Image (cartoon, rainbow, N blue to C red; front, side, top):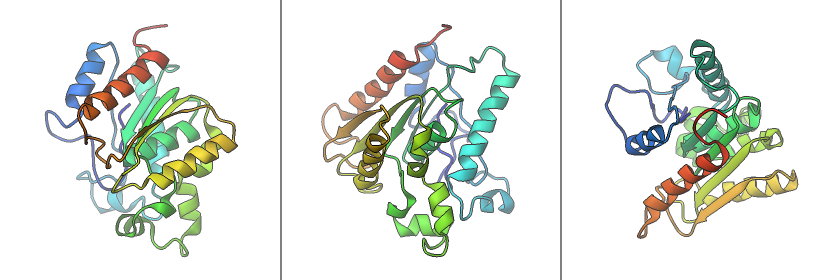
Length: 227
C-alpha cells in the first residue's frame, strides 16, 4: 500500500504516472501488488462534506478509512494475502504509515515511514492549524491525531527515515518518536540522511540510496510471492 491521506494532496488521480511510478513499477516487476486509496479529507472532487470531514481530527479518520479500504480490497480480491500487507509513505504519507502500523497492527505487517509528523504539535501553523484549529482549543484532536500517542500498538517491522536538515517536517519530531519507541522497548529500524531536506535528494547517490533502502526493507521483511 502506498499512502498519503492528508488534506494537502491526493494519490488516486486521473493521470498516467507520478514521481513514484518507476519505483512502483519496479516493485511490481519484483512480484508485489501495488495499490493506494484516497480517504475522505483529501482534495478529491467529492464535494464540501468530503473535504471538511477531517477538520479537527487529521490522522484519525484517515487511518480508519485506509484500513477499512484494505480489508475491503482483501474481501473483493481473494488473491491478496491478508497476512502480508505492507505500507509506505512520505511526509503526510509517512505520518499515516505510522498511524496504520500503530493503530491497526493486525492488518499491516511492514511499514516504511519517510519524513513523518509523529506529533502534530511540532508541525507548522499554516498547515496544522488550518485543518486542526489551535492546539489549546483542540487538545484532544491533537492528541488523538498524533501517531506518537499510539506507539505502544506497534507489532510489525517499521523503518523510519528522515533527513536531519528537513526544512518542512522538522527532525525533532522523529527524534521524539524514536525516544518513545525506546521507552516502550519496541524494536524498529531507523535511517538518518545527514543534513538532507524534506526531499531527501541532495548529494550524489541519495535518491538511488533511499529507494534502494525502501526496496531492500520490503524484500527482507515482506518478500514477494506466496509464503
